[in-house]
Amino acid sequence: MELSGKKALIMVEEMYNDYEFIYPYYRLLESGAQVEVVGPKAGQVYPGKAGTTAKSTAAAGDLKAADFDGLVIPGGYAPDFMRRHDAMVNLVREMTQQDKVVAAICHAGWMLASAKVLSGRTVTSFFAIKDDLIHAGANWVDQEVAQDNKLITSRTPHDLPAFMRAVIRSMA
Image 1 (cartoon, helix red, strand yellow):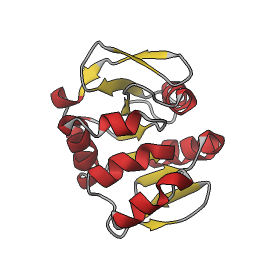
Image 2 (cartoon, one colour):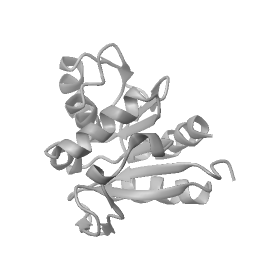
Image 3 (cartoon, helix red, strand yellow):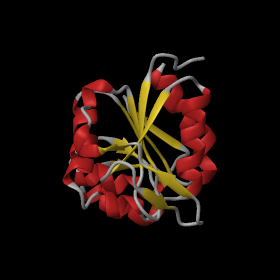
């Protein structure tokens, strides 16, 4: 299993894109990673856009970036809720500063912008937030996966297979 002994985080907040949470969660587990579901509060149940639910196993404020190898941020409307919590934004910033794998799909680029980690970085996203990412200093491209060192981004649920191949390869 490629990620045996690795520890990963997947962020959650209300209105996450169900596919963009579930697919990475199970791919990370399948690859042997230990996965924590991190939200603003531990033990809280968050609803996805399509009605699935996910329960956080940890609160962002209780975690240290140094203890983890990678972070996945699902899209949907959740990133707009996530970025309202300093601890969530700080965790993204710290993971990036410590050169950990940070992976964002769809609208999750909003978290990268709020964490102020996009200056000079090449990323992709759902097209509707392209201007937000450019204004945050990113070089935006329209492709299935954009990988800038350990920063990995994708556009939509259709990109999930390539997105997760890049995440797992980078965390191994």
